[in-house]
Length: 537
Ligand code: FAD
Image 1 (cartoon, helix red, strand yellow):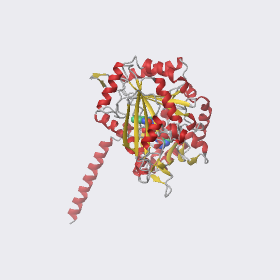
Image 2: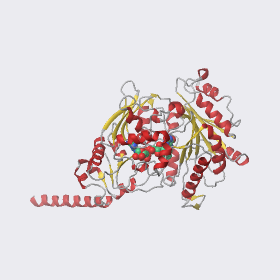
Image 3: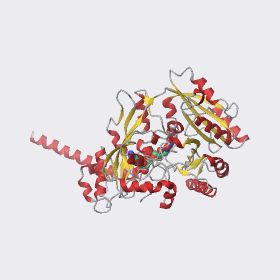
Image 4: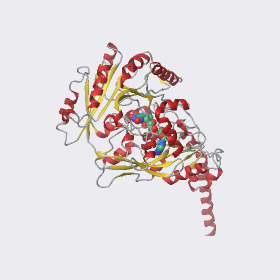
C-alpha cells in the first residue's frame, strides 16, 4: 500500500516536471527585463505579465508590418484593476516610469500600439471575461462594451435585441478602444458623424492610474480628450454606445463615372440629403466612393461586389477610355416595414445623377453581410499569405475646395504615372458639423471634406515577380503625394496620423496643439501612455 502511494507520488512529480519543462520550452522564458523595476514582480497582477518570446514577438509587430519595436513585457489583464495597478505602479515609480501601450487588435500601421522596453497591455485578454457587451435593459437605447471588444461582436450581440450602433468602420475586426482612439469613419459618417460622435460615456484609466467615468456632462474634458486622442490620455475600458432599431436588409448600389466633377457633385448632393431631407426624403444610410484603375480593380479585397461579366465590362471600358473611373457607392437600409417602398425611395434619391448610363449595379444583401463586407476578402488574402504583408497605407482628409487639384495632381498625376499601385483607393465626403471640435481628432478645415484612403499592400510577389522592396517604392510614392500637397498648398490632414517630430505634430494639431499638450499634462503627466504614437516620447 505504502509503496503504491509513493509510486503514485513519483508519477505525479514526473508529470509535473515534464509539464513544467514543456511550458518553459514553449514559452522560452526569459529573465526579468532590466527596463522594468524588480518590485513590480511583487504585485499580484505580475503573474499575468508575460516575458516569453511568443508574447514579445506578437506585441512587437502590427498590421502595417513596417515597424518592429520590442517591449519588455506583455500584460494579459484579467480585469480593469490589473490595468490600474500597472499604471499606478509606473506612475508612482521613484525612478523613471516605464511606458505602457494598450493594444487592441494591433491593426495600426506604424507601431502606434507598441512600446520600446515598456509594457504592452493586450486588451483582448479582458475578453475572456464574458458579459462585457451589455445591451441596456428594456429600452435598448445603448450598449455598454469593454474597450477590448471587436465591433463585429458588438454588432452580433446587439442584433439579438433588434438594435445596433449606427456609425461603423468598413472593417469590423477592430476594437472599440482602438477605433475610438482615432475616430472610426465609414460611409455612415456623413449622416451620424464618426464613431467618436456616437459615444455617451466612457470609463477610462488615466495616466495617473485613476479610473474616471466621463461623458459630455461629467468630466467632459477627459471625455473629449480621449475621443480621437490616440491613446494619449487614458485607456478606455468601457464605452457606452447609442443604439437604434436595426434594419434587416440593405440595397447596395454602385455607379460608375468617367468624370471626377460629376462624381463628386453627386456625392456631395447625396450627403446633403441628410436625415429627413428635401421633399420628405429620408436620405441614404451610407455614401462612399472609390477609384477604379487597372492597378486598383473594381473587385478587390475590400469587397468583390461585381459579377464576372460586369467586372470585365468595366475593365474593358477602362482600357478604351480614360484609364481612371470613379465608383460611387451607396446603401439604403430597409426592413419588413419599408420593404414595399424602399425601391421607390432609392429611385427617387438616385434620379438625376450623372453616372455613365447603364453602369449602375444593385445588390440586395442582409444588414450583417453589408456591414461585414470586408471580412471575406480578408480571409481570402489570409489563405494566400497576402494579409500579413507590409501596408504603407495613406489616409488623408482633403478640403472640398481643393479636391479637384488633388484629383489632378495625385489620382491623375502621381498615381497614373506609377506602375506600383496595389490596392483600393477610397474617396468620399463627410461633414465637419457631424464632428465635435472639442474632441482630439483633427480634420480638414472646411464644412465638406473628403476622406481619401490609399490602402496599398505590398506582397513580396507581384505578378510572379519577387519584390521584397516594393513597400519602399510605395513609401516613396506617399512622400511624393505629401510633397505635391505641400507645394500646391493643399491643407490635408492625416487620418491615423504618423509623424516623427514634435514640429510635425504641432503642425498636425494646429490650433488644437496647446490644448492637447495641456490635457496630456493633466491626464498623463509622466507621458506613460501610448508612446508608439511618438508625440511626447
Ligand atoms: P490598435 O492598433 O491596437 O491601437 C491603436 C491605438 O489606440 C494605439 O495607440 C493604442 O495604444 C490605442 N489603444 C488601443 N486600445 C485602446 C484602448 N482601449 N484605450 C485607449 N487607447 C487604446 N479605420 C476607420 O476609421 N475606418 C475604417 O473603415 C477602417 N478600416 C480598416 C480596415 C483594416 C483592414 C485595418 C487594418 C484598419 C482599418 N481602420 C479603419 C483603421 C483602424 O480604425 C485603426 O487602425 C484602429 O486603431 C485599429 O484598432 P485596433 O483595435 O487594432 O487598435
